[in-house]
Length: 490
Image 1: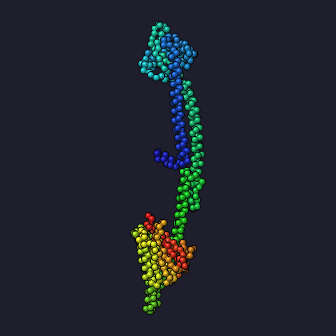
Image 2 (image 1 turned 135 degrees about the vertical axis):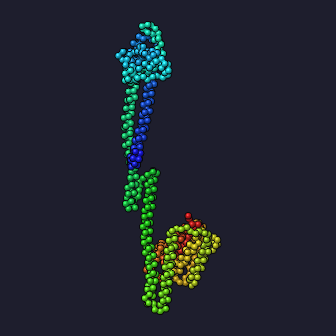
Image 3 (image 1 turned 120 degrees about the horizontal axis):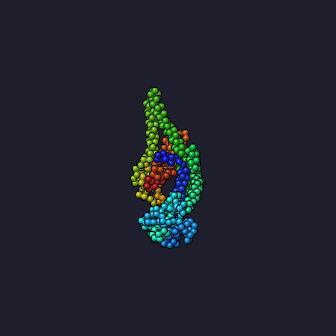
C-alpha cells in the first residue's frame, strides 16, 4: 500500500502536488479554526446560561411551599421567564414540586441523580438529559427548605434551577453550518488561486523544458531568457544558460578535435608513407638486382638510412606529443634559463659550425636572477626545437641569437630566439603551432622537418603555464618569445 501510494505521489506533477498540499493545509487550518471557534462559542453560551441561572436563583426565597412551584409556570412569575425549569428535589432524588405540568414532566431534566450526596459534592453546574432524551438542560443546585402543603412540615431539599440548552445548541449549529459553507468556498478559491499562481510561476519552467527539448534535438543555439534574476527560476535560468553555453562549446570543441584528429591522422600517415615508400623502393631495386655496382648499393643504403632517421624523428615527435596530451606530471626543479640558453646555443653551434649562434643575458641581470621552477629537460627541448626551426628557415650563415630576460610585473622568465630569415607572415602566425601545419603545402623536403617541432614547443610551454608568440625581427626575420612564470600553476 505504501509503495503504491509512493509511486502515485512520485508520478504526480509538481503543480498538482503543490495545489494538493496547499488545499490540505488550508483545510486543516480552517478545521482547527472552526473547532476552536465552536468550542469557544459553546463555552461562552454555557457561561452566560450559568450566570442567568445564578441570577435567577438569588431572587428566590430560601423557604418555599410546595404550592409555590405552581406559580413558577412557563409564564413569567416573580421576575422569572418561562425559559427556566425550577424544581424541589428530595434527598433521595425524588421531585417534590416543579414548575412543569404533569403533561410536560417528560420534557424536564432527569433530576433523579440529584441525591443529597451528589448535590453536596457538586462544585460546578450539571448538564442533564431530559426524561424523553430529546434535549439537554443546564442545571444548578442550591440548598432549600420546603414546607409541605399537606402537613406543614419543613423539610430540607435541593433547589434545581435549569435552562434548556436547545437554543444555545441551535446557535452553535447555525454558526458551524455558516462556517462550513464559507470554509468550502475558501478551500475552492484557494485551490483555484494556487493553480493560477503556480501556472504563472512555472511558466518559465515550461520554457526551460521546451528549450531543453529543442537543444536535445540539435539546435545548440537555444538559450533561456525573460526571468527575473533574483528569483529561484531566474538563478536556474542563468545556470542553465551557462550549462548550455558550455555544452555548445564542448560540441564545437569536439567537432574541432575530430577535424584535427582526422587531419592529424592524414598528415601522420602521409609523413610516414613517404619514407616507407622510399625504403621499399630501394629494397625492391636491391632484390631485383638493379643495383649492380657498389656505389649504387652504397647510395641506396644511405637513402634508406636517411629515410629511417626521418621516420625515427617523426615517431619520436609523435610520442612526445602523445605524452604531452596525457598530461603526465612534470619533473619540476629549480633551473637557470641562462644556463639552458648557453647549453643549447653551444650545441647548435657544434651542429652548424658555419653559423654564428650566440646567447645574451640582459646587462643588468645575473645568472641567479633568471631561475624558475620547471622541467629542465622539457625547456631544453623547447629551445632546441626553436633553434632547429631558426636554422631551417633562415639563410645559411645568417646569425641566430638566444636572449634571456626577466620581467618584474608580473614576474616572468623570457627566452627569445631571434633569426634573420624571411620571418612569419601575420596571417599564419596562429597556425604555425598546429601539428603538421607547414607553410609549404606541397610538402617539399628542401627544408626538412616533420611539422611537429613548434607544436611540441607550444605544448611544453602551455604545460608550464606560459605562452609562446612570434614577432618580427627588426631588419627582417622572426623572433619567437617564450614567457614562463616562476612556478607553473597546479
